[in-house]
Image (cartoon, rainbow, N blue to C red; front, top):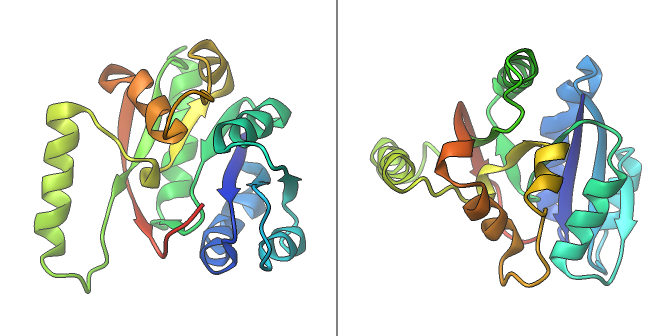
Length: 196
């Protein structure tokens, strides 16, 4: 049902929590495959990905090129792009399955979804920060690549996927999808580190 694509570059520490979070999805059968699109890591990123059973596509290509190649090789009709270090709330699995089912039943596969951006409860004023992020999305429809992206592979191809010409191909893809085609899911996405 779902192919997860994670771009990496020396991301060994950030990759582990993201892969661990995906285990229930793989066990339930919702996550069919996880592809790590690596840009030439010199740390243990590839060993971690291989040990976790991921498909590893290592290439010196640009970020857009690696993401596009991974999307083209995906075997599932739905793609989920996640950055290494992104950890989703425990509710992500049920909500993702429901979103895909609803989209397929209503033929609304021209809609994509992102996860709600959340922050650590230990940070200063987490509820205020999250409320401001929700307001920003409601007013401007701007999602961030740290929120992940759930998209039908046909829609991904129709809008041109990740463009080589974009300075930030992940943000560019979200911008081209636009506010009307992106639904924000209730499950939160938080960062456990930085890097891709």
